[in-house]
Length: 288
Ligand code: SAM
Image 1 (cartoon, rainbow, N blue to C red):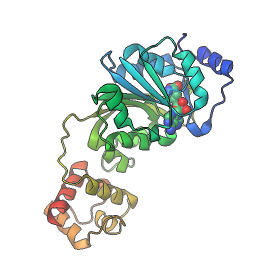
Image 2 (cartoon, helix red, strand yellow; image 1 turned 90 degrees about the vertical axis):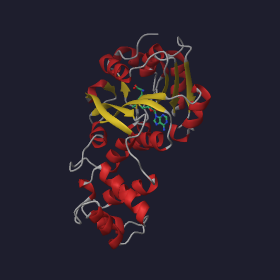
Image 3 (cartoon, rainbow, N blue to C red; image 1 turned 120 degrees about the horizontal axis):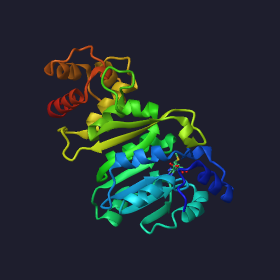
């Protein structure tokens, strides 16, 4: 099978099957071999690795994954792509294609069944309309992960790696950085895809912590405080938290926590580091 990263090969197979792109599925297929090689190199895949690919499309990245990984499971929602994948991946005996919505797949049991619960790598050119739920599901469900290397919208990559005080800093930055260290591997322009997306893209590598550097007494309280802060980001931390429906702290309790931690009473959530959110959360768990 010819490499699909070469534009002519992609166009030929799409024409052969009369494939019609479905906008609702975020279908932008990669047609640039350099970008494909960058993804594979950044993911540091070896024959020891089990890789989950989300949204294989016509199998462009999957071909590379099959060549470098021990085993690949690819989950694709669009049933019209399955016959194409059966042809483009025919030379490989280490790949399983699942025709399913990734948000409905029980990834934890997939890792148990296919990989004895050992950590897996997730490598994908993600459908942009569900980037955040896909990434958060992987982390929040504590899927055993040794790496996540994904193509996402440039703007989302910037939010993930943002630091306190910057305009991109928010709940997504904190949530991802709690679980993993983010690195931007490459910025990828629209002309590397067919059809061209309207936005710029980036490949991001998320390296999950083996041992978390953070000690959190109550994760759900931590994430509620983070959500509350960025729900009304122009307000002070005290006002956002005390006005947030999911939390029942009064002003005195939050003021006491800020005073005890030496933080200004008028601080906004967008100025707090992850460590400071954790310190406030742990203080509230212990003292209220
Ligand atoms: N990996 C291919 C490539 O790089 O050329 C295709 C990437 S394209 C950006 C995203 C793919 O995800 C499409 O094939 C789309 O049909 C698939 N997809 C969209 N929503 C999905 C979902 N909920 N579950 C699984 N696959 C999905």
